[in-house]
Image (cartoon, rainbow, N blue to C red; front, side, top):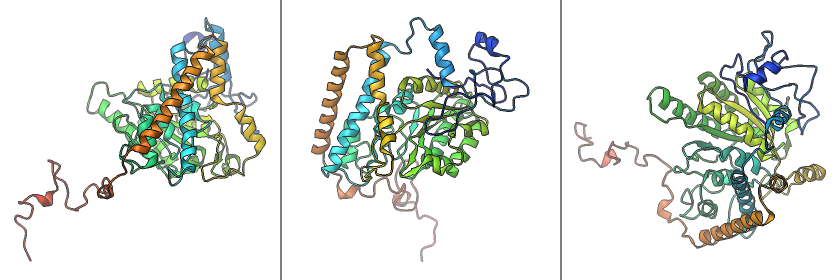
Length: 435
């Protein structure tokens, strides 16, 4: 429903197709006198029109930004039938979103029963963003998350058992119980971690994207087309790492998508009060990459944007900045009484629940019956309950595991090519003076 940009060159975006270009080639990309879609959390409006196309020579913008509504209209006009997903795709999206919601609801129960410790940040309400992007990725693609990372891990394929056990601090967790809620990691699924401090994950994601490019272009490794998706919130977008990594990614045309999960609140600080220009997507074109704002409460819109952004990255056309305007249905963490947000604002977004919206779309378009969707919900409920039983029965880590993975070389003398500590080699001290 929304599409990002097809820009192989930052100075001159490519058209989606030749017919589109001919129909719109005389219209300017950026028209300061016209307004496009409204930024829901702001009184301002995004100023652009049309769809990606060749800009006029006197247009100073280096890359395009597309109005979601225009692309949706065009797709509807050309689609026969008027469907954005197949039944199989819809059921996959629905199952993943229901899994995320049910898992987080169970986490709240377990936290208040004393099964989890520390801060636990839930993802309720934001499922369309995780599902919309991650379900388009391959197992080899990389995902970097934040402290709100449970659902990102689940969408990438980490089992509910492994994530729940990690939250319980058990050895069967994806980090053997040493990561906890804010540090989900899975080498098998290329989940490169959740990060407790905002902005920490963006340099890691940029490094992963650089690795993919280096392997493909320097080492000439076949099939080295991995894409990296970095998730972070609106509060991160005023931090230095964000700007530095946007610059590096654009400079080196790295295969990365920067996904801003703008839920309008950085803990208890309103995004509109903390940012001079609340339209985060504008920071993309400033660095020479496409930037787009999309309704993060609609998984189909997010998915269409993600398709284009992932496709650009995989083809070597560089990074994309996507601002997904979404909303969390709970407080910042389970320790947050959530008293600062306006009840009317919360009610307005709750009425736009992304799972309910997808369910309505699928039933109205005869993609699934109520019975099929209820069967998925029953399956997920059983899966989540089983993950709790598994985590509860799993053993706690032994005390001997306490310093594992804390230091690469706890003994301080280096590790040899055979993986053994150098100081354990009898020849380690040969040739040295003994005092």
